[in-house]
Image (cartoon, rainbow, N blue to C red; front, side, top):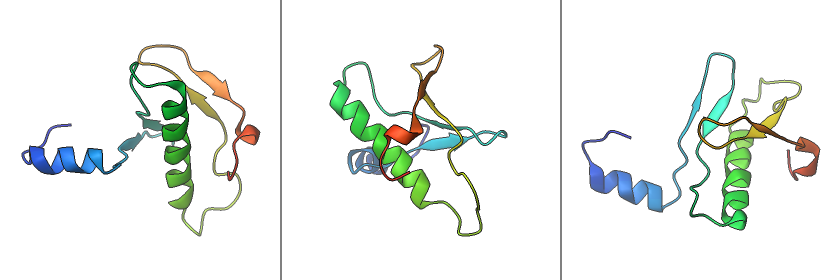
Length: 89
């Protein structure tokens, strides 16, 4: 992220700010961890991203909000996640 206020950016990240991007096809791209993170931390971060996006769902949006979920590392193929195995979606 490019910013002129580095102190503010560091504070936001440490406080749990989630950055994500949505492309034209409606696909959400978000970073949920680094190689140094353990599996539990990545799981917690993934759940938080999904819960945050779910809470942001407009009231006017009807039907299935998450059609499919997959995870991948940078420049690798995605692994499908069974959305029925996730609570609260």
